[in-house]
Length: 451
Image 1 (cartoon, one colour):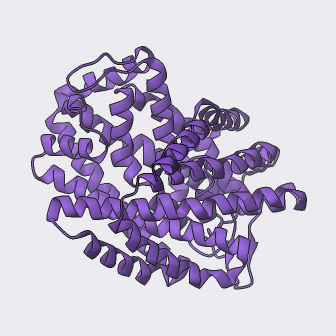
Image 2 (cartoon, helix red, strand yellow; image 1 turned 90 degrees about the horizontal axis):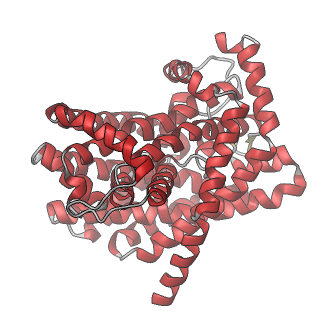
């Protein structure tokens, strides 16, 4: 096991090294420039379409509402990355890492927009009458049959990655936090989580969408309000915290308290890596959800998809970061979820701890729902729709296993698979960029955006 762990750690360090981070950032920057900074300029339009997306037009084709599609995406992205991931970025890279998380999000908006545009443009209707799409389909249908192998590679990597980052890791996080906070046995958490997830995913995408469209906004609002209360109570420290984020982004952070210090390269590396881990722009998971949306144009759904990155990183992650910095918890030597919990408890004794605990549990639960759908769609692409029911049953069984075992190897394996699934997706985004730009120009210049 030690040899396997060491090997995976080495591979993870390579696949998530500077070349991968540059490829993710570079693709986002290329798309941002090609779209003439449209995702940032049209952010307000995206929010307008989001609220209009609760009631799509009768002529719109698809399976679930655009709003539900975004909530399904956010169910998978707002999770441990927003609580533990931000804390880890600050622990390893200092407060300046938050700035690079913001940069990752700003270019990631173009990436997420482009993924959704292609997902809707090249989606299919399967033999059950369900709308299916995502990188495997826009690779096959957009690049042609000769590239189908690349789509299959994405589907394979994503299907495997789902059982790691979207299943076992989430179940283990819930079991761990409930055992520490409430002394709930891990096996009991595993059984309860498996039963709840089964009750939702057995109903398919529409039931998942119905659950997450209520649960995700509620939990996100509770978490952000809790953070805002702490920031109001620590208002004098907020300007200094923001100044520290900008200053340390270009100078690194000196050692202080339990913080060991970090150079500029470490600040950039961990900020970018944790930003991508949080919002998943470029990984190719989100377009699987957006392909199912009832929409009249690919660019319309793309404008909704891009605000998922803004909500996830610019809003939720920033709240976590400012609480950690303003309360002084970032110098404690703690890391991960423990650092976030310490910061919230320092800023809002007792109540703050419950905000983090409740947030981790609900966010992890919704993440298992979102990723179950992603993995299921990838499995169906590879093996046909007959695999869907066995896949759902296996998903539930693995949840219980994840709750009761130690997961260092699973974390590493999931990390590697996440990087590998990003490669086919980024290749497709670059090769199909002309289609993305053309659809976008036609939509925003042709008056369709005004409808």
